[in-house]
Length: 250
Image 1: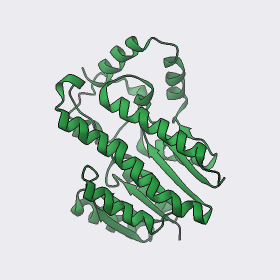
Image 2 (image 1 turned 135 degrees about the vertical axis):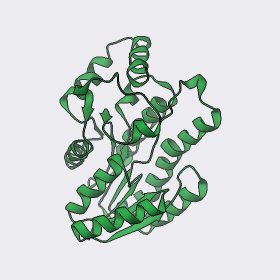
Image 3 (image 1 turned 45 degrees about the vertical axis):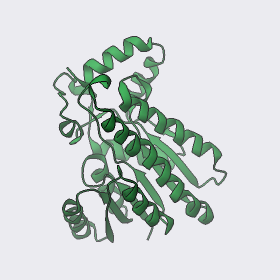
Image 4 (image 1 turned 90 degrees about the vertical axis):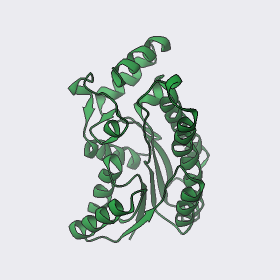
Protein backbone atom coordinates (compact mmCIF):
# COMPACT_ATOMS: atom_id res chain seq x y z
CA UNK A 1 0.00 0.00 0.00
CA UNK A 2 1.16 3.60 -0.54
CA UNK A 3 2.69 5.18 2.55
CA UNK A 4 2.32 8.72 3.87
CA UNK A 5 4.58 10.31 6.48
CA UNK A 6 3.05 13.20 8.43
CA UNK A 7 4.91 15.47 10.84
CA UNK A 8 3.01 17.12 13.66
CA UNK A 9 0.58 14.25 13.23
CA UNK A 10 -1.22 14.07 16.57
CA UNK A 11 -3.25 17.29 16.48
CA UNK A 12 -4.84 19.84 14.19
CA UNK A 13 -4.12 19.61 10.49
CA UNK A 14 -1.68 16.73 11.02
CA UNK A 15 -4.37 14.62 12.68
CA UNK A 16 -6.85 15.60 9.97
CA UNK A 17 -4.39 14.50 7.27
CA UNK A 18 -3.89 11.22 9.12
CA UNK A 19 -7.65 10.54 9.23
CA UNK A 20 -8.15 11.43 5.57
CA UNK A 21 -5.22 9.39 4.30
CA UNK A 22 -6.09 6.40 6.47
CA UNK A 23 -9.65 6.53 5.13
CA UNK A 24 -8.14 6.49 1.63
CA UNK A 25 -6.27 3.28 2.54
CA UNK A 26 -2.73 4.61 2.87
CA UNK A 27 -0.31 3.23 5.42
CA UNK A 28 0.92 5.93 7.78
CA UNK A 29 4.09 7.04 9.52
CA UNK A 30 3.19 9.49 12.28
CA UNK A 31 5.85 11.90 13.54
CA UNK A 32 5.55 14.06 16.67
CA UNK A 33 7.39 14.77 19.92
CA UNK A 34 4.91 13.17 22.33
CA UNK A 35 5.39 9.39 22.11
CA UNK A 36 2.41 8.57 24.32
CA UNK A 37 0.10 10.68 22.20
CA UNK A 38 1.57 9.19 19.02
CA UNK A 39 0.91 5.67 20.27
CA UNK A 40 -2.68 6.51 21.20
CA UNK A 41 -3.33 8.16 17.82
CA UNK A 42 -1.84 5.19 15.96
CA UNK A 43 -3.98 2.71 17.88
CA UNK A 44 -7.13 4.69 17.13
CA UNK A 45 -6.32 4.91 13.41
CA UNK A 46 -5.54 1.20 13.15
CA UNK A 47 -8.81 0.31 14.89
CA UNK A 48 -10.97 2.70 12.89
CA UNK A 49 -9.48 2.31 9.42
CA UNK A 50 -7.60 -1.02 9.48
CA UNK A 51 -4.39 0.46 8.09
CA UNK A 52 -0.76 -0.03 9.09
CA UNK A 53 0.54 2.81 11.25
CA UNK A 54 4.15 3.39 12.36
CA UNK A 55 5.06 5.83 15.09
CA UNK A 56 8.25 7.85 14.91
CA UNK A 57 8.87 10.09 17.94
CA UNK A 58 11.08 12.99 16.89
CA UNK A 59 11.63 16.60 17.90
CA UNK A 60 12.18 18.57 14.70
CA UNK A 61 13.73 21.46 16.61
CA UNK A 62 16.75 19.19 17.18
CA UNK A 63 19.24 17.94 14.61
CA UNK A 64 18.88 14.41 15.96
CA UNK A 65 15.11 14.52 15.45
CA UNK A 66 15.40 15.73 11.88
CA UNK A 67 17.97 13.02 11.12
CA UNK A 68 15.65 10.29 12.41
CA UNK A 69 12.90 11.37 10.06
CA UNK A 70 15.34 11.80 7.15
CA UNK A 71 16.45 8.19 7.60
CA UNK A 72 12.85 6.95 7.46
CA UNK A 73 12.13 9.01 4.34
CA UNK A 74 15.19 7.63 2.60
CA UNK A 75 13.61 4.17 2.91
CA UNK A 76 10.75 5.46 0.78
CA UNK A 77 7.33 7.05 1.17
CA UNK A 78 4.73 8.05 -1.40
CA UNK A 79 3.49 11.22 0.31
CA UNK A 80 5.25 13.53 2.75
CA UNK A 81 3.22 16.09 4.71
CA UNK A 82 5.51 18.62 6.40
CA UNK A 83 3.01 19.94 8.91
CA UNK A 84 4.93 20.45 12.17
CA UNK A 85 4.96 24.05 13.34
CA UNK A 86 4.10 26.50 16.07
CA UNK A 87 3.56 30.19 16.77
CA UNK A 88 4.74 32.77 19.31
CA UNK A 89 2.31 34.89 21.36
CA UNK A 90 4.56 37.93 21.44
CA UNK A 91 5.59 40.48 18.84
CA UNK A 92 8.92 40.04 17.07
CA UNK A 93 10.88 42.30 19.43
CA UNK A 94 9.38 40.55 22.48
CA UNK A 95 10.37 36.97 21.58
CA UNK A 96 13.74 35.56 22.74
CA UNK A 97 16.10 35.03 19.84
CA UNK A 98 16.55 31.35 20.79
CA UNK A 99 12.81 30.82 20.31
CA UNK A 100 12.93 32.54 16.91
CA UNK A 101 15.83 30.33 15.82
CA UNK A 102 13.90 27.25 16.94
CA UNK A 103 10.96 28.35 14.79
CA UNK A 104 13.22 28.74 11.77
CA UNK A 105 14.63 25.27 12.33
CA UNK A 106 11.17 23.66 12.49
CA UNK A 107 9.51 25.72 9.75
CA UNK A 108 12.44 26.03 7.33
CA UNK A 109 15.37 23.71 8.00
CA UNK A 110 13.23 20.66 8.75
CA UNK A 111 11.03 21.30 5.70
CA UNK A 112 14.11 21.69 3.49
CA UNK A 113 15.88 18.58 4.76
CA UNK A 114 12.85 16.30 4.86
CA UNK A 115 11.73 17.34 1.38
CA UNK A 116 15.20 16.66 0.01
CA UNK A 117 15.32 13.30 1.81
CA UNK A 118 12.01 12.21 0.25
CA UNK A 119 12.43 13.44 -3.32
CA UNK A 120 15.21 11.13 -4.63
CA UNK A 121 13.16 8.00 -3.96
CA UNK A 122 10.04 9.58 -5.40
CA UNK A 123 11.87 10.62 -8.55
CA UNK A 124 13.44 7.19 -9.01
CA UNK A 125 9.96 5.61 -8.81
CA UNK A 126 8.48 8.31 -11.01
CA UNK A 127 5.74 9.11 -8.51
CA UNK A 128 5.41 10.89 -5.18
CA UNK A 129 4.04 13.96 -3.48
CA UNK A 130 5.14 16.52 -0.90
CA UNK A 131 2.77 18.90 0.87
CA UNK A 132 4.52 21.65 2.82
CA UNK A 133 2.08 23.32 5.19
CA UNK A 134 2.59 27.08 5.10
CA UNK A 135 -0.09 29.68 5.87
CA UNK A 136 -2.01 32.60 4.43
CA UNK A 137 0.32 34.56 6.72
CA UNK A 138 3.00 33.91 4.10
CA UNK A 139 1.41 36.63 1.96
CA UNK A 140 1.33 39.21 4.74
CA UNK A 141 3.78 40.70 7.23
CA UNK A 142 3.71 39.53 10.82
CA UNK A 143 7.07 38.70 12.31
CA UNK A 144 9.16 35.58 11.96
CA UNK A 145 6.13 33.32 11.62
CA UNK A 146 4.91 34.91 8.39
CA UNK A 147 8.49 35.26 7.12
CA UNK A 148 9.17 31.56 7.69
CA UNK A 149 5.92 30.59 5.96
CA UNK A 150 6.78 32.84 3.02
CA UNK A 151 10.02 30.86 2.75
CA UNK A 152 8.03 27.61 2.68
CA UNK A 153 5.90 28.87 -0.21
CA UNK A 154 8.88 30.11 -2.21
CA UNK A 155 10.87 26.94 -1.53
CA UNK A 156 7.97 24.68 -2.52
CA UNK A 157 7.32 26.53 -5.77
CA UNK A 158 11.03 26.55 -6.59
CA UNK A 159 11.38 22.82 -5.90
CA UNK A 160 8.28 22.01 -7.96
CA UNK A 161 9.64 24.02 -10.91
CA UNK A 162 12.87 22.01 -10.94
CA UNK A 163 11.32 18.53 -10.89
CA UNK A 164 10.99 17.14 -14.44
CA UNK A 165 8.92 14.07 -13.54
CA UNK A 166 5.22 14.94 -14.09
CA UNK A 167 3.98 12.65 -11.31
CA UNK A 168 6.34 13.99 -8.64
CA UNK A 169 4.81 17.10 -7.12
CA UNK A 170 5.58 19.59 -4.38
CA UNK A 171 2.82 21.88 -3.12
CA UNK A 172 2.62 24.58 -0.46
CA UNK A 173 -0.63 24.56 1.51
CA UNK A 174 -1.66 27.99 2.80
CA UNK A 175 -4.70 27.83 5.09
CA UNK A 176 -6.13 30.73 7.01
CA UNK A 177 -7.37 30.47 10.60
CA UNK A 178 -8.12 26.81 11.39
CA UNK A 179 -9.87 25.54 14.51
CA UNK A 180 -7.06 23.49 16.05
CA UNK A 181 -4.88 23.57 19.17
CA UNK A 182 -2.40 25.87 17.42
CA UNK A 183 -3.53 29.18 18.92
CA UNK A 184 -4.12 27.77 22.39
CA UNK A 185 -0.63 26.28 22.49
CA UNK A 186 0.81 29.62 21.46
CA UNK A 187 -1.28 31.40 24.13
CA UNK A 188 -2.82 33.66 21.48
CA UNK A 189 -6.04 35.57 22.07
CA UNK A 190 -8.30 34.73 19.12
CA UNK A 191 -11.45 36.43 20.42
CA UNK A 192 -11.10 39.24 17.88
CA UNK A 193 -11.11 36.95 14.85
CA UNK A 194 -14.50 36.96 13.05
CA UNK A 195 -16.32 33.64 12.83
CA UNK A 196 -16.38 33.68 9.01
CA UNK A 197 -12.58 33.49 8.90
CA UNK A 198 -12.41 30.17 10.75
CA UNK A 199 -12.02 26.91 8.80
CA UNK A 200 -12.25 23.28 9.91
CA UNK A 201 -9.16 21.12 9.66
CA UNK A 202 -11.01 18.49 7.61
CA UNK A 203 -12.15 21.13 5.12
CA UNK A 204 -8.58 22.36 4.65
CA UNK A 205 -7.28 18.83 4.11
CA UNK A 206 -10.00 17.98 1.58
CA UNK A 207 -9.21 21.09 -0.48
CA UNK A 208 -5.48 20.42 -0.21
CA UNK A 209 -5.86 16.90 -1.59
CA UNK A 210 -7.98 18.18 -4.48
CA UNK A 211 -5.42 20.84 -5.35
CA UNK A 212 -2.59 18.30 -5.14
CA UNK A 213 -4.42 16.05 -7.59
CA UNK A 214 -4.87 19.02 -9.93
CA UNK A 215 -1.13 19.69 -9.90
CA UNK A 216 -1.28 23.07 -8.17
CA UNK A 217 1.91 24.33 -6.59
CA UNK A 218 0.19 26.58 -4.05
CA UNK A 219 -3.13 25.74 -2.41
CA UNK A 220 -5.16 28.45 -0.64
CA UNK A 221 -8.29 26.73 0.68
CA UNK A 222 -11.71 28.40 0.25
CA UNK A 223 -12.82 31.25 -1.96
CA UNK A 224 -12.81 33.72 0.94
CA UNK A 225 -9.10 33.26 1.58
CA UNK A 226 -8.25 33.30 -2.12
CA UNK A 227 -9.99 36.68 -2.24
CA UNK A 228 -8.13 37.92 0.84
CA UNK A 229 -4.78 36.95 -0.68
CA UNK A 230 -5.69 38.58 -4.00
CA UNK A 231 -6.82 41.83 -2.38
CA UNK A 232 -3.75 41.82 -0.15
CA UNK A 233 -1.50 42.18 -3.18
CA UNK A 234 -2.86 45.68 -3.79
CA UNK A 235 -2.84 46.92 -0.18
CA UNK A 236 0.24 48.71 1.25
CA UNK A 237 2.31 46.23 3.24
CA UNK A 238 2.56 48.57 6.22
CA UNK A 239 -1.23 48.60 6.53
CA UNK A 240 -1.40 44.83 6.08
CA UNK A 241 1.09 44.37 8.90
CA UNK A 242 -1.01 46.48 11.24
CA UNK A 243 -4.24 44.69 10.41
CA UNK A 244 -2.81 41.14 10.51
CA UNK A 245 -1.11 41.85 13.82
CA UNK A 246 -4.38 43.12 15.29
CA UNK A 247 -6.29 40.05 14.10
CA UNK A 248 -3.76 37.56 15.42
CA UNK A 249 -3.06 39.27 18.75
CA UNK A 250 -5.26 41.83 20.52
